Image 1 (cartoon, rainbow, N blue to C red):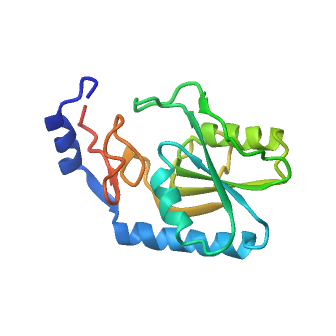
Image 2 (image 1 turned 90 degrees about the vertical axis):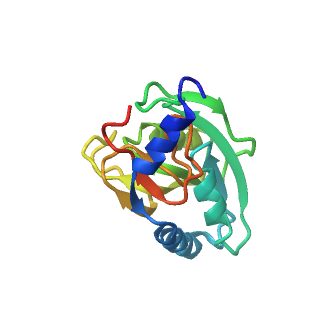
Amino acid sequence: MTGLTRDLLERVRAEARELHSMAEVNAGIRAVAAAIKADYEDRNPLLLTVMNGGVVFAGRLLTELDFPLEIDYLHATRYTGETAGGDIQWIVTPGINLAGRHVIIMDDILDVGSTLLAIVEACQAQGAASVATAVLVDKQHDRKARPGLAADFTALYAEDAYLFGCGMDYKGYWRNAPGIYAVREETP
């Protein structure tokens, strides 16, 4: 557990505030799916999941999209198990050729947005016909990488707190928490 004890992890979960229940998460995902369907059902889109955080959102979103599409994944991160971001690290790039494709990037959270912007730029550099972004949560604050930065499709909004659940993690744990939670500030 890399220095984290089970007791600490259980305490973090027990003391966290639930910001969005699974019912709210599912409703937000269904709304995103409806919007994506309206814009992309005739465009043969390629949906790219940002690992590891985007896996829960992507899995739930994909089952709501009832039209032909392809999926792939990539892994780029700024966090590597920490609670504050650093430089972007590319771990895995998409295996499908992006040239001429309508790409939708699926991720768990839009926080500052540096990682998401770098992924968008990388897809554009590979010749994607268009690149859109879909996130489970947009964290509300004024530290975005670019003023007014927003995803094209957003399921939910959350306060500026350290969040976990539905793909977002607390130091590598609790991605599996059912709902979206804010860590209590005093938790180490």
